[in-house]
Image 1: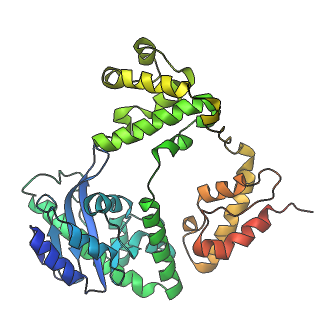
Image 2 (image 1 turned 180 degrees about the horizontal axis):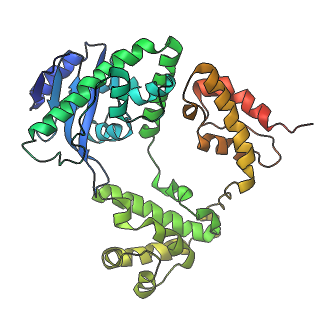
Image 3 (image 1 turned 60 degrees about the horizontal axis):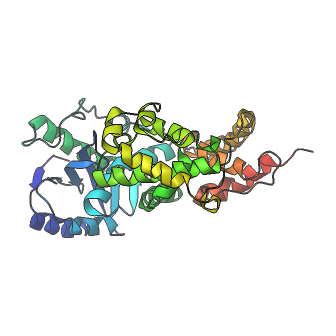
Length: 374
């Protein structure tokens, strides 16, 4: 495919092209963005290829993304991306929409056992035999004008992405293609779920060590931190460093001097939000016992490593049979969730996170592996 680069610089042109792309069987998509000290990614460029032409959409010139959102959500058009997690965040923040169906070429490579979590350049070289230049990944994508090297890099990325889709799609069985799309849909679904700020505390390191009254403080602090990061559009650690949350909840300082002594507490945080943090701590600490969270379960002990190895072997056997990268089969978090349903003596239940074809093909084998041996 010869490379023809066209710019999209206004709302009307983008809307017209999106109507055109909605008639295609697929579009390859890529983004360039900046995310140094912000909560949300700042889009610097969107690249689109339908297999014939490449368009570079300038998000600094567009303020109506409704047509692009409609393209992302049109079920008849496959959206092709590579290692799509960060691109999905860009789409969600920019257009309020996510791609469906989603074909991730990195996932497809895993299902073809070409490699797991392969970088884009390596996959292009492996499948298409093309050596890509080092690229402009650390460029300032918000500068204008973009350099010729930046433009060429961005355009080639999405051009070869379209070619990868055709090449990989031809090698995937109908079953494996369905699994690639299933995994894409799950990734999109996970991002659609709105995180409740009041539940964030459950995932913080060492939270399980705290008593219910201390957990009530941790819950309020982490919920405030999450909300403030979104509202201010800054990183969570810019609001309060994560390493400070657990000692804050445990010791519950009552004045600014004590607050400043908390582990990893940034002086800026004390200066800008110290009084607010003290008020949050005081209010949460005074909650009646009925409003305290329950104690969190302890992490699985080290002894489960033997069981985890046996469970992973179920996935490895199935991966060998199906000729799939074994890392794609069973995620450690899923296996740990399974063990937590009944460790140490059972009975065990398949966790909700084991879904789709994995549950169907390996669910019973996992349960059988955990059955006590006579």
